[in-house]
Length: 213
View 1 (cartoon, rainbow, N blue to C red):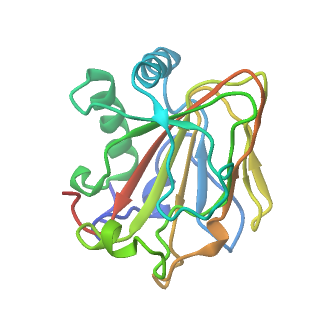
View 2 (view 1 turned 180 degrees about the vertical axis):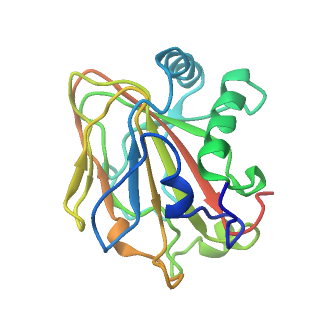
């Protein structure tokens, strides 16, 4: 495993040592995908957990648009064996010390639900920046996994780099929320597009600069 330069981060070199990992050919952002990262049986188990304890999704900095993020979210119990298996697979992939990870979340998107263009890092001038970043620091990397394939819609579109990912069961997307110089990268702007038919389930795992408390 490649030695990582900074806690809470991985690297392109580390990720590309893993079978199936592909990098989007753009100089604007470090974005990767990996088809079939999770097996179908684990995806189905995680869907069951999400359905058992979901709630309306929220925003760190509400912007007055009630339709900006309309999905439902579930905070997954780290004691669940399937969550522990997911964490094991992520560590084997990215080499990030698990203490830097936020608790795993799942999201459910019904027909018409979406998450409009956004970045995953916390805006330094946001009203709640200190609240969210004072202890664990800024988000570093995002790892997102599609757990199923809705009948229509639900793609993830990175507008700046001109790349759209279609949901596929078990497929992982990940990206560095920073540029190589350490500054926040607005080119990671992405849109969880509306589901047109069916339901979409995803897992999201964020990592931080400092250990999560």
